[in-house]
Image (cartoon, rainbow, N blue to C red; front, top):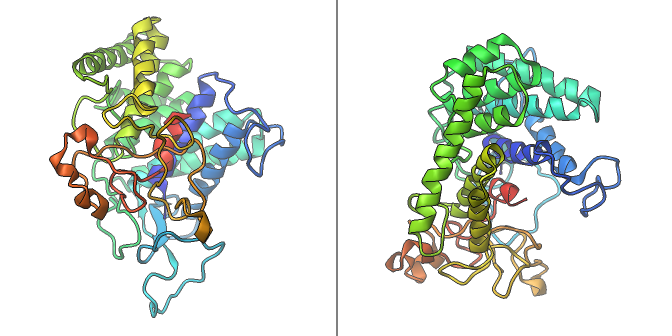
Amino acid sequence: GKYVVNGGITAWTLMNLHEQGWAAFPDGSQQIPEQSNGVSDLLDEARWEMEFLLSMQVPEGQPKAGMVHHKIHDEAWAGLPLVPPTEVDNDNAHENPGQGRYLFAPSTAATLNLAATAAQCARIWTEIDKPFAERCLAAAEIAWQAAQENPNIYAGNTPGSGGGNYDDENVSDEFYWAAAELFVTIGKEEYKDYLLSSTNFAAADAFDWGHVAPLGTISLLTHENALSEENKTALEQAVVDFAERMIKAQERDGYKVLIDDDYPWGSNGLLLNNMLLMGMAYNSTGEARYLDSVRLSMDYILGRNALNKCFVAGYGTYPMLHPHHRFWANDPSRGFPPPPPGALSGGPNFKPSDPPSDAADLMSLPPSKRYVDDLQSYTTNEVAINWNAPLA
């Protein structure tokens, strides 16, 4: 399936890499259809996801206009391995369970994800493709207004089992993030007042698709804006305080893991996001130990861990080989390729719950070893765009 709240943080991460000033993935450096079009391949990838996010907005004249559909996925889980279809003919009569792909209802969280990322997109593309930038900004402001009018439409347990729920019943962080991005892009007092009054102002802690307030903090620190020096100092201090807490956690861990809690589902994605905040702490202070923390964390991802395993496909002596992925099943005899270099595994999970994990009795091992490189291990070896984006 495709999920707006997963796509939102992914697109933001790629665009933020561009906004940090790194000349990453220049035009023609990647094997993608859009290469050699005069735009960096990084932004080409971000735009691909942005086009999807924009397409999920309810058009004018329809019920809940301006809101954004939460997700789109099959009625039942597709098997694996599987060659993905190039198009889907929906089985609307439901005669064959599992056939067809369906659009799910709008949610406030998805709507604010579009408001935030489309505002970010608008300021980036204004010098690259002005009509696209204008389209993004219009969509962002419409989404913000729609979310204000519908502040508590939550995604919950939806019918069918063909995708994840991605439920979220606290969207105060999404409101703060969206207000921050809109304020950075167009500077309206409305957005400034909203973000300053938010309980999420200056949030700086571990983030993922369900907790996005730190994204707003990062954007406010990245760009010149009309916040007071006192406000800017509060933002910087919050990030530095987080970095100090994480360094203490890292020093306590034998493998210098940058996680101050249990290993969640997708622990590698969480660790990489923590690294982004460590980088922001370095930008604010110039303290080399924050960069050292990032280096130690990459050492963990690339193999200096309790498993002696590189969680990135195509790298190292013992790379990830068998991700939970419909097509990258690593079975060439059946037409399924290995994972491409750079694909990231979700990593150890303190509470794995899939057949290979059960068969390996992972719960008898320390949390840092609860991982199995197996196609069927969706709780430890899944690959996902929101985990891979911060690896860039």
